[in-house]
Every structure is written in C-alpha cells, then in structure tokens.
Image (tube, rainbow over all chains, first blue to last red; front, side, top):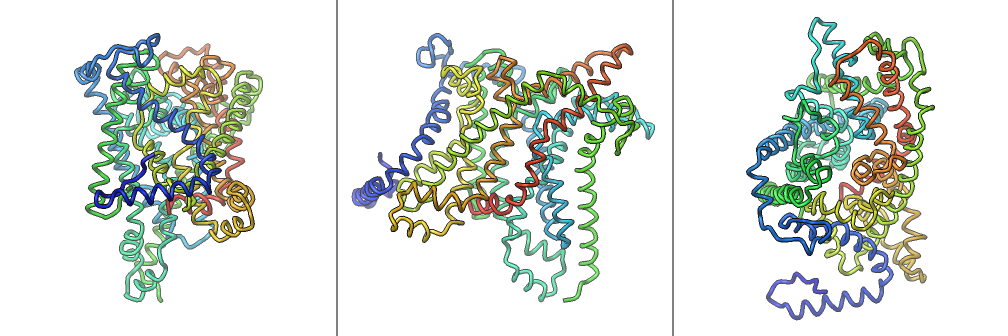
Length: 319
Length: 293
C-alpha cells in the first residue's frame, strides 16, 4: 500500500523510510492491525461500496441484472430531475428549511451557553442543564407526536389558549405556511440544551486569568462576555458553523417525513423525503439514486468551499 | 473588585432569561406527564393545563392490554442491547489503534474513516446493498448498517490519547503486556466515563430509531417500538385531521388521546431512568473527547 503524501522533492527516500516505519509497526503492532480490520471492512462494505453502487444513477438499474449488468443511460436521470415540476419546489424547501434553521437554531444554543456560563448558583445551573438537555433524548416519533398533540386544532392546548383569548383555532399542521416555523422552533426546543454543551465545554476551557485581567482593566460583565468569552469559543463556533453549512442541503429525513401530510406537502417536500418516496416506496432506484447523488455532491462542494473560506478568514478549519 | 450596576443588571437578566427558558422547556414535559394520568375528556377540553385533574389511568390500562406495544417493546430492548454491544466493541476496536502514536498508518486510516462523514453513496445504494446481503426483514438490517459512528470513534480516540497517560501503557508493554492486554487491563478500566457516554449515545440511538425499521422491516412482529408509536401518535392524528368528527366515535377518540400521553411516558421511561445516572459523565467523558478532537 502506498501511503505517502510526500512532496516530489525527495520522494524515493521518504517513501523508503515510511515504508520501513510501517513494516516495523506492522511487526510490533500486528494485533492492533488485526483489531481494526473488521472496522475497515465495515467501512469498505457499508460506506464505500454504496459510493461505488451510486453508479446506478447513471444506469437503468434492473434488480435481476445487478449494478454491473444494467444498461448505461448517462445523465438522463439527472436531466429528468432538473426538468421535473418538483425540482424547484424541492430546492426551495430544502434550502428554506436549512437556512431558517441555521438562522434561528444556530445562535440560540450559543446564547444559552453564554447565559448558563454566567450563572453563579450551582444548583440553578444544574437544574437548567438537566432540564434543557432532557428533550434531546426524546425520539423523533415522540417529538412529532408531541407537536401534534399540542397543536391539534380540536384538542391541542395551544389552540385552547388561542380560543381563550378570542382567536380562531389554527390548523397548524395542515397549513403549509406554518410548516417551516414549527419544524425549526420545535427543533430549538428539543436541541438547544444539548447543542449548548459543546460551547459550555469551550467556555470552561478559557483561561480565568484573562477574566481577571479584563476585570482589572475595568471591563464590566457584558464587556467580558463580549471580549473574552466570545473570542475564546470562536474556533468552536466556526467549526460547528462549517459543519452546519456543509449540511445545508441535507435536511434530515426523519422528522420532516413524520410531519408531512398531503395538505402541507407544498412546503414540506424536501430532497430526502423525495428520494424516499420515489426510491424506496416507488422503487425507482436509479432515478432517486441520481437525486441523492446530486444532493451529496452539492453538500460536499459546499463543505469544501466553506472550509476554505473559514481557513482564509479565521485560520480555523476542519482539515 | 466591586460589582457595578451593569454587572448586577446582567446578573439579574441572566437568571430571568434562564428562568423563562426553564419554564418553556419544562412545561410540555410536565403537561404530558399530568395529561397521562388525567381524564382524557378533561384534557381535550383544555381544562387541565398543568396539574393532573380528574385522575384516570385509562391510557395506561389500554397500553397494558395492547399486545403490539409489548411486542415492540421487547423487540426494541433486543435491538438496543445487541446493537449497543456491537457499536461499543467496534468503536473501541477502531479507536484504540488510532490513538497510538506508534500505530503507523493511522492518519491514512483516520482519513479513510472520516471521509465518510462528508460524502456518502446515499440512501438508495445502501438500501440495495442491505437487500442484496439478505438482511431485509431481519434485525441485522437495523444493527449492521451503522454499526459504528465516525464521530464516536473520534471522541473515543481523543479520550484515549488525552486521558490515559502514555507512560502507563509503555510500562505495561515493558512488563510484557501485549497490546491487547494493555487495552483490556489498563486502558479500558480507566475509560469508564467515556464508555458510559458511548453506551448512552448508542443505546438512545437504537431506542429511538425508526427509519431503518421503516425501510427494512415488513413483518409487524419484528417492528421496534417506535414504529408502533408512529402509528399511535402520528398516523391516527393525520387521519383525524383529514376526516370530520362524529359524536359517536368521540369516546373511542378520547381513549385514543389518553393512550397517546401514556405511551409517551412508557416509551421514554428507560431513557428517563438512565439519564440522571449517566449525566455526570457528560462533562467528564464526552466533552474531553469532543473538544480536543
């Protein structure tokens, strides 16, 4: 196996030493290589083989003929997707939900962490953390179930409150206009505590002498948050932002699919649910593999671009 | 150093905002718990808003007599136990070698593994693979794909690197421990916090999963709990929204409502019981790994 990434200047020698190091390691740590082999096999079979199998996006997959034997069709499936009625609707919804989520869902955990970090009372801090982390452990099915219960037009407590104040009950879940808001804010409710953990950990890592120094210089609490805490956790924020932007086309399937119904499909149909209904339910394997591949490629490109941008601006990056 | 007026205001604002957040998060949870032991009619009229009213256990009674829910429950327990065991073993098998600086090739292997976080073949090729491996409609379809998480490998590797002194491992090697003995006798006993966190993450993941069951299982007797939950909590609601209401079905509907609240409690009970015990490890384990990784 050629594992060198050495520059062209002195390739032969570098490769030689690397090879020797590897052989020595292999002799001494053969059991470690043995240990990791099943994991590598797992990734080859369940992650890399599907990447190879994605070629059916360019073929007309017929189960009996297998991936190999099926006829090539070039980019027909992609063309069909781009020209279909659903294309722009899917893009609009996928991007719309992601951006909405990024805008609301990204800063809130950060704010929460900054607030929790300011709490002096240990008990209160612990209660806040325990309670806000808890919804993270609810399953998606239960979460969507709760949304339905609370927002139900006849029985839901939210509509009872609206009626109590003289309003008209709103059918939140069949109204396309409400879909994205419900999706994003229920996500905030469920995830803000859990997402704040990583920032809290970063805040705990800030050198206390920085705060001392700022205090001596006459900085008030707000200024210390702004000038000490925020810069201190910036690298973490940037990394998470990169990851989030990289997934901007990858709106998760699970929750949207459960919240989806015929009446709100106009604003709830996203790429992942489309792939599922076309591919798994409709058995149009090649076509939906093409849609999925289109999605993965866009995600990957976005990730690389954002990462490069962050590297240049902030000197923080994933790799 | 004296507190200024601004400092005090900030302090009060912090407590006030967090107090509101606390109530907003807590309220729905308390509401569900109360609703599950209240009379369903009272709840659906909106007369119960915080504490249980007109006590009734009809929801729980219906659950206990529902065979399918218990099928789902025991299936889920099986999938969770087997799945988590495999997850944990695989994660350790990957993380330990990758944590060793004398393990040549670890950068290449790490890259090979991490790449899959950013690019994947997608749903359809994976589905066809699972199908062609003959795992359709077996529990393995819920366990083998996703047998290990890249993210958790990295967290665990970082924990091994940063929390277990290298000297101990080296001296164990000098004393004649093989690599595997070192892992088993030295490293793992020192890694209980991270193992607890991994068990929590993986088991909650299995407990809550429904997607793989949805696409790979056709046999109702193999359904995990979440798929039955989906029928109870979501499908019925959608039917209700679509159709109009008839008074004669009202009683039946009320019971259905009561089941919903009760099932949410029953379904989450194991997680709720596990959570406080494992919570203290979050900071210790998960964070060390996540931050430095």
